[in-house]
Amino acid sequence: MKYTLYIILVASSIFSCNTTKSITSKQNENLEALKDNDTVTIANEEAEYEIIIIDPGFNYWVASQAKPRGYYSQTYLENRNQIYVIEWNQRVLQPQRYSPSLYELQINYNQVTDYGYEVNYLLYNYFIYFQLTYKQRLGPYVPRI
Image (cartoon, rainbow, N blue to C red; front, side, top):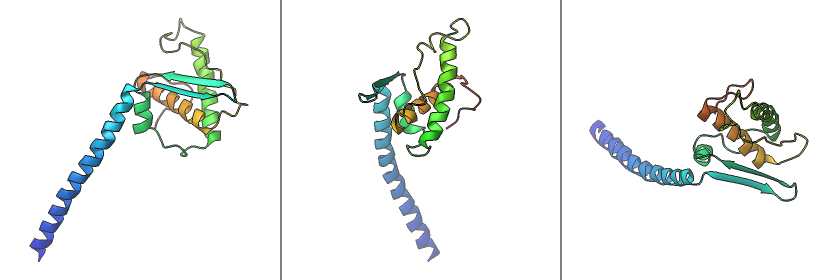
């Protein structure tokens, strides 16, 4: 009796491993496709703003590493983005101290403007991705996912 139960458990674990591999393979293919698409454009004609993020690997990182949408509140994202934008813009203005290849353009982010959840989510995650990838620190918070 114990022997039969043991074989059933081994057989079920073998089948479950094969099923997991095919699902995982499909997910990996989707994530690999995101690596090729390295440009994120967020536009809203009503508010007249546009954000373009061109950084290889960012789409892949958001899909595979970032916290899911809805994990943070919009207020949390706006507060963190404001801190990160201020530090970012200060570094853009100091090319002799900070690499101009990392900090190319200023970010015009107005905390009073409601950019919506998606813009704040992607901007926040870009700052986290940037800090982790390029080993930078934009403010008092340790970047983590």
